[in-house]
Image (tube, rainbow, N blue to C red; front, side, top):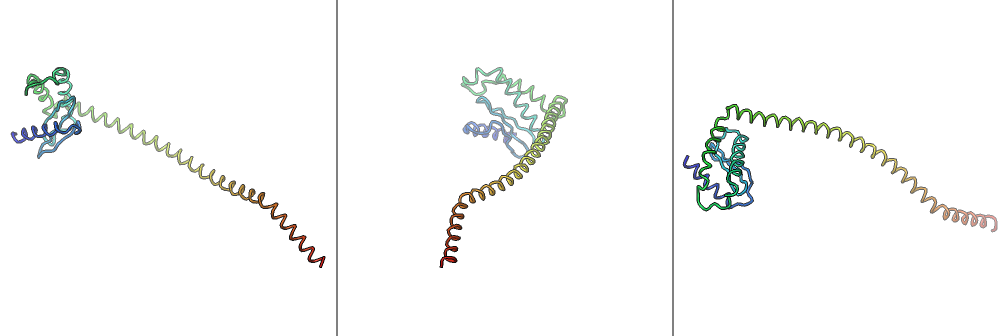
Length: 191
């Protein structure tokens, strides 16, 4: 266990150097995971077996965070010596016992609540997907209508272009036709 204590110290030092590190993360180390939350300049860190549910580990850390901030918030910035919050250790130990066995009724009910929440989210997502499907059908119908209307518009535009071309060049064509007809008459009958 001494090896993991050293790793925890190294991890805390590394996290204190990196200001923009994720505020929640799980770090794998052999058969264990370090789970941590950084909030308000304080790092809450726990070491759990690989099989321990991450959700419970983070709930444990969140509970420690809430209590620590409630009791020690005003003193956080003024700490001058290591282990200044040693009195908080009793709360940590009591809370740790509550979370130690994942099969206790308290922890099972927390996991079941989370599972219920996930199924509600999934149900909501399915309903949203079905709503999206309806909207996609509406969009598909609208695009079909637009395609039909654009075909009609294209045909009308071609017809209008043809009419404009006729209006523009018909007088010139008629004048040229009359001139040619007059020239032909003149040549045929006057010569």
